[in-house]
Structure formats: structure tokens, C-alpha cells
Image 1: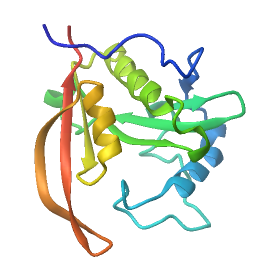
Image 2: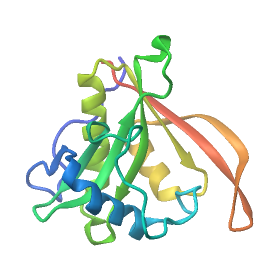
Image 3: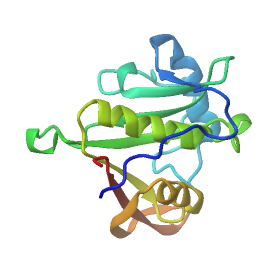
Length: 176
């Protein structure tokens, strides 16, 4: 039997704070991107004001789930197609996950990850994949605890802060 995304609530949260993103979340999500930027997880340069629009033709609100603890977004996950090929349409890819420092340690990232798996399943996907930097031990541990397995590694794929960093491909089935 193949595992499905874990069910249940995250102990630090009493109700699901996860909702679809709305166009008016753009400013808050852009701020989260700016304040959480780190070479631990980012391969692009630190965003600088004036920021590009958070939502655009390739990054639409419907591709995002947002964690909102009552005062606006504190995190997000972006779920998309890994390619535009019809033969790959059964796969969804997590293409971004960020949680504001003020909301860390409360199960927000785990709740977003679980919500992304549930949304992928709702969309008819049978697999979810993601890429994570090899030196990002906290993220890799989270993904592994949620059933993601390393399926490939591109050694030294990125040069960050003077060091070569692996690009780790992880995936998990959604069927069960």
C-alpha cells in the first residue's frame, strides 16, 4: 500500500488556517519572501524594493495556498505543474514554501505541506515532487517526515556564498 499524505491536525493549531490565496494577499506574500530570504533555500538574489509583482502570468493566486492565523498571511506554498506536458499531468510540484519568522515552530509549514498534498490529490494528481537545497537540513527533515523520499541529486548544482550546493529532488506518491 502506498502512503497518502498524513491526515489530522497539527497539534500547535486548533483549526485549519490554510486557505486559497487571494489577489489582495500579494503585498503580504511579497513581504514574507523578502523577510525570509536566505541562501539556505533561495538560489535567486535577495529581492530588493521596488519588488516585482508577487502575482503575474506565471504565478497566479490560484497556484498558492496561504496560512492565515487571523491577521493576514504568515506563510504560503505554491503548487504547480512540473512541466506543460500532458503525459506529466498526474504530477504536481511544490514550487515554493515560506513561513514568516513570527509563525515558525507552530506547525505552519507542515500544515501548508499537508494542504498542498490534499489539493494535489483533489486535482487528480498521483504524485507530488519538490526540489530542496542539499544543505537545507530542516526542510529536508520536514519533507521526509511527510513521506517524501530523495529521488535524485544534482551534486554541486548551485554556487551559493562561495560554496557548491546540491539540488535534491524529492517526491512521494499520493495514492493509497
